[in-house]
Image 1 (cartoon, rainbow over the protein chains, first blue to last red):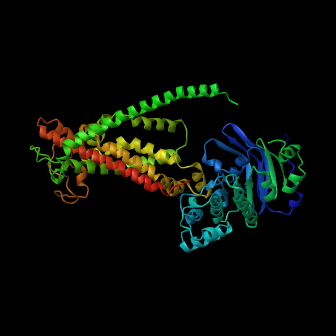
Image 2 (cartoon, one colour):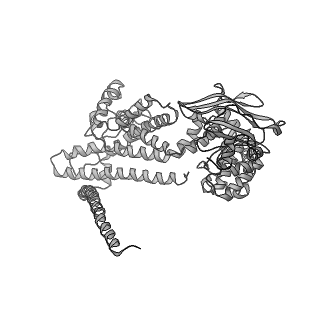
Image 3 (tube, rainbow over the protein chains, first blue to last red):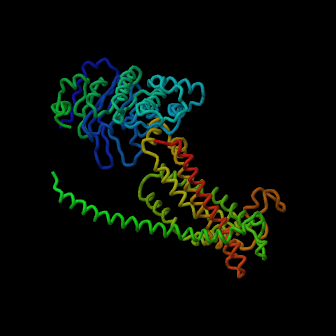
Length: 267
Length: 308
C-alpha cells in the first residue's frame, strides 16, 4: 500500500479548510490503529469516511474530539489542525474539553440522557454556563427546529427523551450537538440503528445542516456516502487510501483498491 | 419422509432426556424449600412467642429486673441513633470512594490491588472491626464507649458494601451515556454530578440500605467496643444535658442496641425474659425487613424514569 495519497480535489480549490490531519497516527497501547493520515476537512461541507470494518474510520473520527483521552493507553501522533486559528487539537496544552466545546458528536446508537427532551438539549448549554431560563428556552427551541424535531416534540418537552422513537431520539441527539453552535459535528454511523424512513430523515437533515456547520461522518453504507457527502475518504487497515470529491471517488476512483471496495468486489 | 420407527426412537430419547429435567427441577425445589422453611419456622416460632408481648409499653419502657415491665426503649433508640451515625459516615465516604475508583482513578495495578482489598474487606469477620474500633475510636481518638464509636465502627463494617454497590451501580450506566456527556464538553465532575450520580442513585441507595440492614443486627463489634447491656436512661436530646449542653452531646452517650438487649435477655434464667427476647427479635427482624422493603421501593421509584 502506498503512503502518499494524492488528494483528488481540484474543484475544491476555492473552499476553505476547516480542519486537517497532518501525518496523523493513533495507537491503542502497542497497536498502531492509524498511520500517515493526511486529509483536509472542508468548511461547511460533508466529508464521509468509508472503508471496511476495522479500517480505523471511527478511530479517526473520535480523534477529532479527543474521545480517546477518556481511556488509558491511547496515544496520538502528528497533528489535527483546526482553522482559522491553527490550533493543534491534539496538543498536550489544549484541553480536550475545549476541543469538545468546538466539535460536537452524534453517536452510532441514539444516546439521549435519561432526562426530559428539553434538558437533553439544554445540557450542552448548561455545561457552557448558560443559566438564564429565557435564553435556554430560545436556544433549545432553535436547536430542535434546526434538527427538524420541534413540531413533533413542542408539546412534550418535559417527556423523557427515551420515550421518543429511535429516529426522533437521534434527531434529539443532533439537536443536543447543535445547541452549542459547534464548528464541526462528528457523526459516527448515525443511522446504523435506524429504519429506512428514519435514516432518510437524518440524511436530509445532514444535507441541510451543512449550510451552517462542517460535517464529518463515518458510514458503512456507501450509498449513504454517495448521497450525502461532498468529499469521501476511503480508508483501509489504518491508512487513508484515497481522498477526493465524492462524485469522482465513486465514479472514477484513482486507486484500484477503492474501486474494488466501492463496486463491492471486496469489503 | 420419516419412518414411524424413527419418530418413536426420537420420542423415546426425548422422554429419557426429560427425566433429568424433572429430576433436577425436583432437586431445586427441595433445596429451595429447605431454606425457606427453615427461615419460616424460626420466624413463625419467634413471632408466636413474642407477638403477645409487643405493646406500646414494650417500646416505651426501659429494661427492668421484672420481665413483664421490661421494654426495649433504650435499645431501639440506641439502634436508631447508631444507624444514623453509621449512615451519615458510610454514605459520603463509600459513595465518594466508589465514584473515585470508577471515574477518576487511573486504571493500573495499584487500583486493582485496592479493588481486591475492598472486596476482601467485606468478608472480614465483624469482631475484627470491633477490635480495630476499640483501639482507634474508643482509646486513640478518645470517643469512649459511645454512640459515635459504635456508629463509626458499623460504618467501617458496611463501607465495603457501599463502595461495591456504588461501583456496580455506576458500571451499569452504559458507556454511551458517559461518552454523550463528555462529548457535550462536560468535565469529569459535571459528568459525575449531572449524570453518573443521579442515574446510579437507585443502586447506591439499595446497597446502602442493605448494608445498614446488616449493620443493625451486628452484635460482636458493638460488644467489643463496650456497649452496655443494661441501661435505664436515654442519651440527652440536644441542648438538654447538664451544662455545657450542646447539639451533639448524645454522640458521646453510653448506649445499647437491639441485638445486645436480646442477647442479654436470652442469657437470663427466667423463662419470661426469653419471651421478651423473642419479642425484641421480632421487632428487629421487622425493622430489617422494613429497611429491605424500603430499598426495593426506592429502587423501583428511582429507576422508573431511567431507561437507556
